[in-house]
Every structure is written in C-alpha cells, then in structure tokens.
Image 1: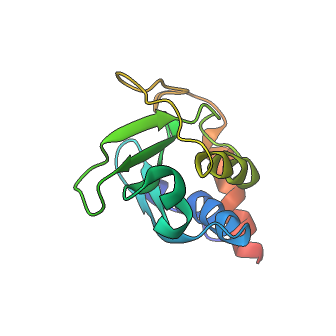
Image 2 (image 1 turned 135 degrees about the horizontal axis):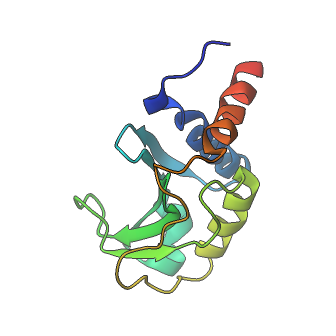
Image 3 (image 1 turned 120 degrees about the vertical axis):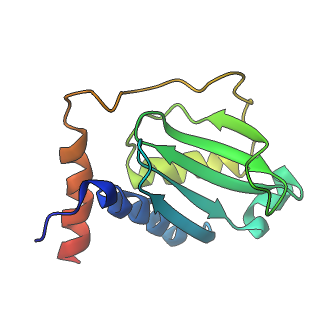
Length: 143
C-alpha cells in the first residue's frame, strides 16, 4: 500500500464516517477532507433527516484533528455555521460511535458551545494519532 501524504491522511477516516452514516440510513449530502493546518473536514447531512429538529437550518458535522467532532448548523448555503456544539466523543471516535452521536443529533438539538471549543490534542503532540488514522487508509485499501 502506498503511504498517504500527511495532508491527505485523514480523508479515509472521514470517508469511513460518511460511509457508516449512509449505511445507517443517515443521508449525507456532501463531505470533504481539507488539508488545513490543523487537518479538518466536514459532512453535510441531508435536510430530509434534520428538518424535524433544525427546521430550515443546514446541519454539518465538523471535524478537526485537535478538537474532534462538532455539530454546526445555520442557514443553508451560508459561508459558515451560526451555531456550534461539541460532541464530546474524542478526536477520533469510530464510525459506529459517530453514527450513534449523529442519531442523537437528529432527535435532540445539543447545547450550543459558548466560547472556543475544547482541544483533545495538539499538532505538536507525539502520540499515536497518525497510526490510528493510517488504519482507516489500510482498511480502505483492503476493500
């Protein structure tokens, strides 16, 4: 298997989460992995699944390698989300854990995070984060 570039190493993880949501009948409109510093990404949920709780707002799952997952919602097609809520499930929860967290989001609007979201890790940390990310790339290559 060819090793992924550092800036792309998180894409298989985000793809695995998006695939798990779709397999659980949670519709995904779009997803993306961004090569920002810190690496980040998003998954936009279908309005058909979110309208009962969020009315007309678009709901997006936001991920960052330092802060983990947050839920964001606001006017569709806005340049940014209006409201953020931390999901408090770590920086790299499994796709199955994200399905559970997303199902909860689809039934109950979470409390809004006031101020800056918390951090689980720093880019400078010497931890096993890259090894954990690489597992998703290996799984994707084996399929």
